[in-house]
Image (cartoon, rainbow, N blue to C red; front, side, top):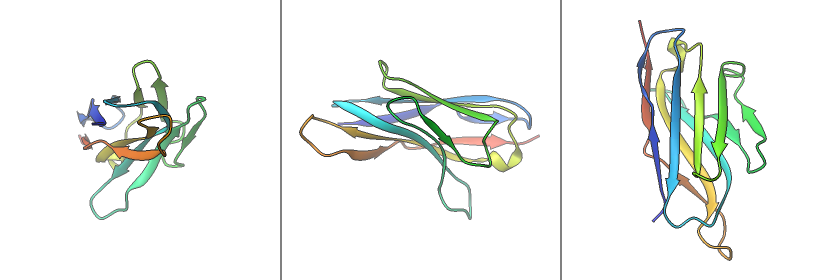
Length: 121
């Protein structure tokens, strides 16, 4: 029943900004880490940014200083603010959440369907 739905993708010019959102819904007891991944044609899916339940963050070197990840635990939503976008940032962006559906079940990883981000002039 858990769903992750991304929004905010689209077409933007180099140097522009986009804000991605990913809302988790359904049978959720608690969420540990929430992450953003991306995959461009011909490339491996890579971790862009992650945030743990305490607010600690990690970023890929390629986006560090340009992207900011945040979360709203009340809304079960993770955000990715992308500034100073480059053509190389073009990819399908996926969010994921490592969560429990009940207090007694193991943590499982859930994925969104992805949202296209295209940076082009």
